[in-house]
Image 1 (cartoon, rainbow, N blue to C red):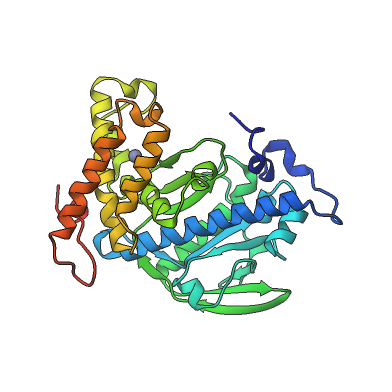
Image 2: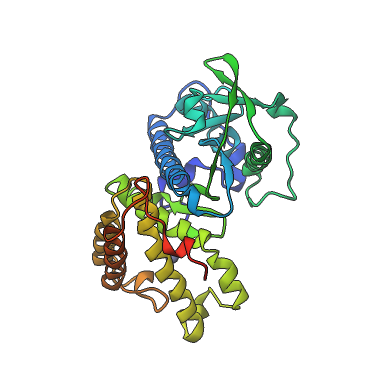
Amino acid sequence: MIRIFFPLLALLVAGPLCAQNAPDADYDPDTILALKGLQRLDQRMNAIGYRLVDANASYCDQKTARTGLLLNDVAQYADQGTARFALGFDGPIGITAVAPDSPAAAAKLSPGNSLLAINNMAIDDIVIDDSQSSSEQPAYRRVDTINRMLRQMLAEGDVELTISEGGISRTVPIKPVQTCPGQFQIRVSADRSATADGKMVSVSSRLAEYFLADDEFAAVVAHELAHNLLKHRDRLDAQQVNRGFFGQLGKSAGRIRDTEIEADRLSVWLMANAGYDPQAAIRFWTRYGKEHGKGIFSASTHYRWKKRVQLFEEEIAKMAAMEPVDGKYAPPLLTEAD
Ligand SMILES: [Zn+2]
């Protein structure tokens, strides 16, 4: 695994690094800048993910109640003192991002606030559930547990969050919205990649830095979200498709390619409904394809970028021929039974 070649990697806990806190007094300006840069990527990802799942909610049969908040544990950072200073956190769990037009934004929560309690249960009293956590990194398990708890409470209705802002605490009611399911994260990594594991959409920090505009960012997030909404992982597992190296061959390659084509087709509908320019998918994949022609995207599991552009054009033409309802286009892949 590549770790040392990318400065952002050093910001996050990597095993034994977590015990090494910098002296409190002087904060390294480069670390502060890098942390703020990473926070901006988190904020863009959170805003784009929220907009996609919110705008397309009526086409998803399963729903998730959501606030629009992104939480981070101060323990996740290698240099916790600098992280607190750079991100403004005064408690163990900080609000890294608040999606625009979300319930959290309506409650006037902001990045830099710290979360002290959920429905009067203090963060410090929450028992970390190691057995349930999907994270391999111990430093991520508390925030995993809190997110899972919050999702369960939101599924039952409104919640009260107690937050601290500049040392002053207040409790605010939050009324969640029902959206398509899905979680979104920036994965700090030196490779340019995006993945969908059935629930989570992950975009590497290096790829996120490569997007020229939020519309391009949304094109990739919408593609990965489409994999999750169409339950592609379950389908490939049921077909016993090898997703590793041998997936490049024979029947597995064809089945993976089918899911890639569907994700491309659905992605532009999700984008358009969320107010993103679907043409950005064409712009992004053309630029990326020209620069990365020989990489994974030329493997037998994926269409070459010119063919992908053709798929996007076909779907955009279908939308153009439709009469939108409330400004939205019902995506055939989500609304027509298969
Ligand atoms: Zn894909």
